[in-house]
Length: 330
Image (cartoon, rainbow, N blue to C red):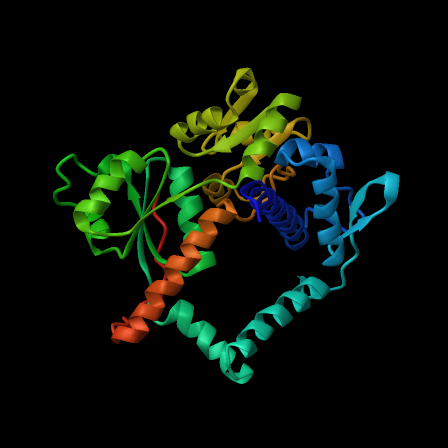
């Protein structure tokens, strides 16, 4: 197979993964429903760089999985899915059958599978230090690292790490961590620190769908962001970029009167930290709550989680008694 063909097939697989993740997160999150229209062939081609024939194959693959319905010239729509207890049954069943089939092919007895999966992710909690400088990102990503991956996570304010890295609670959290996590804004500073302490470093990225939605909303009209840390407001401007960044309105969570006055006109985005402080503000948010990390970042974190636990099993170095969670600060 030629390099060009391999590259094309890889790009098609990435497009299938992108749309599958987008559809499933929408279905499980409740902001996408059966019958909703999806991106046109032309729009998906522009987004992914594929030609229209490749996009057709992408949607055919998703139709084969029962996720979409292709209705000729009318477009592509989310397929109906039976639900029970908030789960999308058809898709969940298909996924689980695939997982168990692979387990069986590896000579695993299926009744043993639940215990094996638990050993792979929870034999020994991974102690993680998440290093950032804005309260909004510290609370949002720490919450996701605890909730979705079970990491025993401590938030570390990057501004509190002195140049000499000596003393203080933040120093202890970093020194005791099994894994350091940060964002691209602090990667250059944290990387030499990770190398000096001989600790793995993970630079997490925001899900591209969130970035695209923020950019779209800012370009379409007034976008309001409710925040806790003023530095987070600057981050949002950087993410949106261009002239549209100047059209974003920012409201501090502590300004309860301004929050109360938020109406139904315009798009509103509330950070995780701000939501914890203001509660339900009675306004539909433009970017639904849920996961903020990219699929690639999640895959890397899962690989680290599994490798750490399998190593703990093989060396007998499990640390019992830890819960994998800690109280958020900020």
